[in-house]
Image 1 (tube, helix red, strand yellow):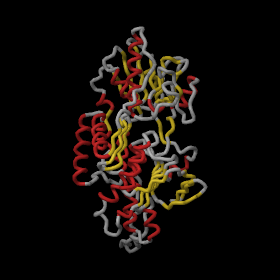
Image 2: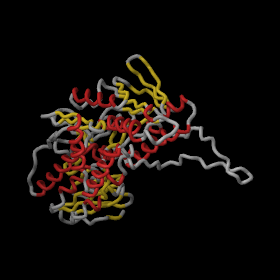
Image 3: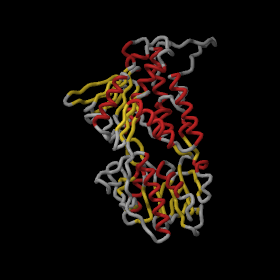
Image 4: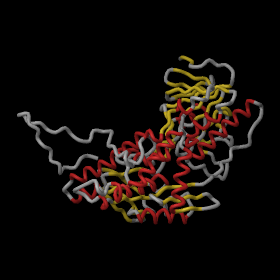
Length: 452
């Protein structure tokens, strides 16, 4: 193997993952007397809280993505490497990237999580989740292809299935997706088609618990449900999905079993840790929870390995109130910054108290002028909450050009009700037009549905 860096002073910090946890750690170490190496399999940081807007055509992927090299270009002590860490040597203190190695004195692992189907991984084919740019593009393709296929479909039952969208999971992602699709159907697309009435679109939001947005205060959950229903969303709580197959969603409500015919099922119900969780468990003896998250010490280190830290969605930190911290961006940001400060303190022979997450609130968008915000000391809903949601998301976007582009796009969308990023890309959707032996084109039957 080839060492990408020789072991030399100053202190070598390796960060695996360029999400919120890894990036905020790197930025907090920008002026420290350390060498930082940030490794990610993508060359960009993705602002995941706005990924649902890519999936529903409001924004383009580049609007919410920032090249890591650009973000950290002024951090002269930081090197960015493109690659996927697939192993760790805790004895030699090196991470393995393909056939190369990178030595570390301190290792920060922030590789996040992916969606979980609770043991039903075969459902992924029928119900994509939303964690990556590719996920969002695939989701966008399915959403808009459903409308296109419905425009060509003459069979009423098949058309209903094409215009039925099922979102599984009533957390923030599910709520935001449901509201966005409902607005698409009733506002953005209402004049675009000639053979279908998009306002007849049915959006169902399924949640297993007794209310949507379970982490929020009950009154805000009620407000969110009322806002969704005002948009035409059918919210069904205490509903468990038992099967997804062949455009049929099987649900259980109490003792009653029902089926829903839907060509477009979207998954927003659960997450599991990235594969690095198992690597850390195998190499360090770390304990993991059922979702594969690494159970960390009060300072976010792994037990028995005080120089290996896990932050963000990959970490199970339950030292504050006995429950793991939620997998949201603010947790990852604060954890990344804490570890960066702790590293600098330790180099000086000092220490920090255990990590303490400061919950500054939760927020979710339902639709235009409709959102809920829980700041602890105050709860907002309606227009004020909507405006606050916009401001916070603009503020936390990483680069200025992203802030500017997103703000302009939102202003334009606000006045026009248009979503300009409604591109259908990805898998080939339309079969070539058949050609007869005489060389003439044979028109296809435009009343046949496309596969979506």
